[in-house]
Image 1 (cartoon, rainbow, N blue to C red):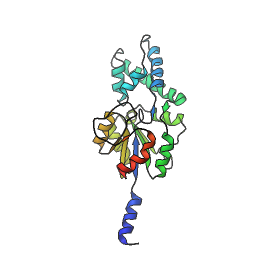
Image 2: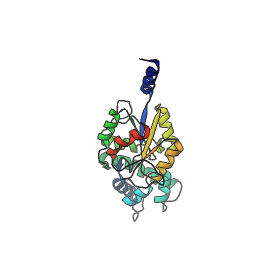
Image 3: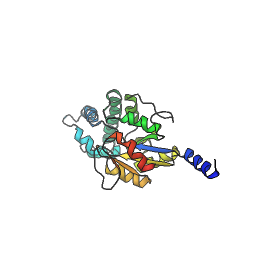
Image 4: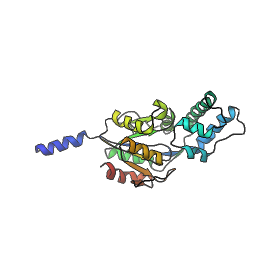
Length: 232
């Protein structure tokens, strides 16, 4: 083998390409069960005439949990009481989803497995509370945390209180990715990805639209065709 060919082969071997996924509106829709779980805790806290709907949850998907609490619990006094209500909802939500799950989009695990076979590494970054991604993975009994696992690493706002763009960069650096893209469904996903310095793929079947010309998928399975066009 010529030196040039050998160098190219070594460079290709050293490349590590990652696909980083949003959760809600991209991988699954948990809004119905989240709304039910939160309504239980809202009423337990004494707000007997209050409730949260599936549409309420969908309208705030992708926002940090403290912002969501401010939007959905304006009747709870700001400060300790609102924070306590938010914490109760978050904890019960994780417990409930670990037992009951949500609506998984078609072909997620099959597509992840195929993408792994194609040489891509799979990750999740979300603005959710700590334990939410683990509840999803636990419900579906998906191994994670190692290179041989279907999902190799996860990060979220609730773990470190960093914004999504910071967590995208953090995860990419932590896993030594040479190339990566982010798959999400709403404008804030796109904005965070651009700020992090990575290309974006829009899941158009999700909860929102994107004010930019970007690669799109209309179903999860389309990633096997779109990702190679985006990051090779």
